[in-house]
Image 1: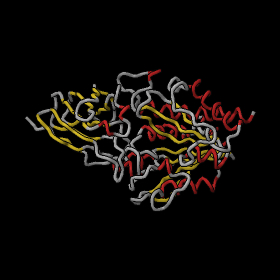
Image 2: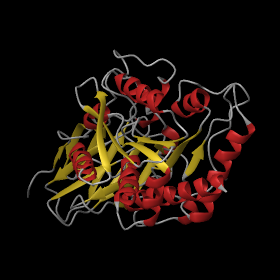
Image 3: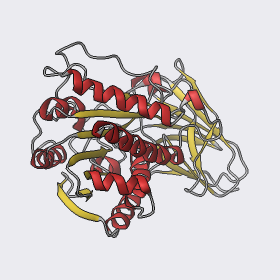
Image 4: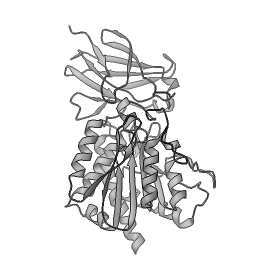
Length: 379
């Protein structure tokens, strides 16, 4: 009988093997480099065909968001195309907080991940495919600390400056699945929503703002261990060149509407976070944000407004975060879109939970809501 082997030596891989006994393994997640953050895992198991695996990930009480493990089921795939969920049990009192994953693979190799991965190879495929569309211009905004390009895809000739950017937190891979859906719509010559958005807007799309963290298998930081979404008030070329390149490009174009796409570990729902606490908040600016949320909630059952983050008190908004910084800096409507690592409980899917497919569809839905929002503004 083949021995079970566990490996994470690949793009976005992350796991440490503590022990293997038959089909039971004790594992630990490696921390982001030069950081205390850890929660993202991605590894493969071979040699267990037809046998039930018991995979115990330990030490999770010290993870970035231990409250996110309760009610969570791990993502699993045998073909790396379809990602489902498998039974996972959280025990706060065992092994410093443990998640026990059980699964019986039908094939020789099976992959497990915190969420369905979006590899750098798939990212390059997305950028290449999109850049080939006749309506798109490619723009390199700069390079990361590891020398990877910060890719930006631009299209449209309208006066409204729209910025869409994702994966400041690299482990939130659902954000780039969202980008794939949005870009498919925006570049489809037969799609009326994409056509009308290109007519009204100049769209600047950054599918992955943190390629180093993505490739390294980080949860939340870049190659220097820096949380990019706490750098927007003072980015530097030494610590956060990704943010510096992005913000400089925004300064050059201006910003009228911005969406920063993320994932949330604990809240089982899709929601928005806004900029209510910025010092210069204007009534019409906040009304524009609220109206977008209303439109999106009406357009799709995969979005809701009851669950979300606490709203900052007046004047207390954190300007190191991009949504607040952009709203303050440009007087624009900006927002953070959060998707769950678990499921969108108001419209749950037991087989997949929140998934790449639903992330892509939400990207399309958000573009439809943006068009409706713009049409209302023109009326």
